[in-house]
Length: 173
Image (cartoon, rainbow, N blue to C red; front, side):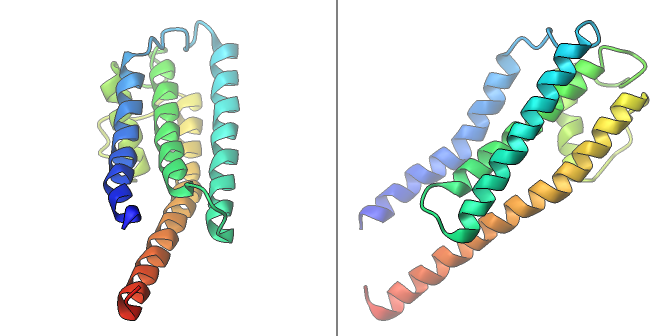
C-alpha cells in the first residue's frame, strides 16, 4: 500500500521537474553565449552535449540491466535538458543574422527545438548558415538516437511495471 501513495508524488516530480527546468531556463541570462564569445559558446555546448549523451546512455543501461534507481525520471530530465541545450545553442547562433533569421526570443528557440525534435518542420524558421545547419543535423541525429533509446527504456519500464501489477492482482498479493 505504501507504494500506491508514492505514485502521485512520482507523477508530480516527473511532470513538475521539466516544467521547473523550462521555467528556470527562461529566467537565466544567456547573453554570454553567441558570436561574441564563440570559443566559450562552442566549448560549453560540446561539453554539455557529451555529458548529456553519457548520462542518458548510463540511465538507459541501468534500465536495461534492471539496476535500482530512478532511470525513468533521470531519462526524462536529461531529455528535457538536451532540449534546453539545443534551444540555447539556437538562441546563441541567432545573434548572427547569417545563421538563424526568425529566432529572436527564447520562445522562438524553444519552439524551433521542439518542432525539430518532433520532425515536423513548419518551415517558418530555417537554418541559413553552415553552423546552424550542422547543429540542426546534429539535433536530428541526437533526437533519433537518444530520444528513441530513452523512449524505449521508459516503455520497457512501464511494461514491466504493468505486468508486475497484473501478476500481483491475479495472485492476490
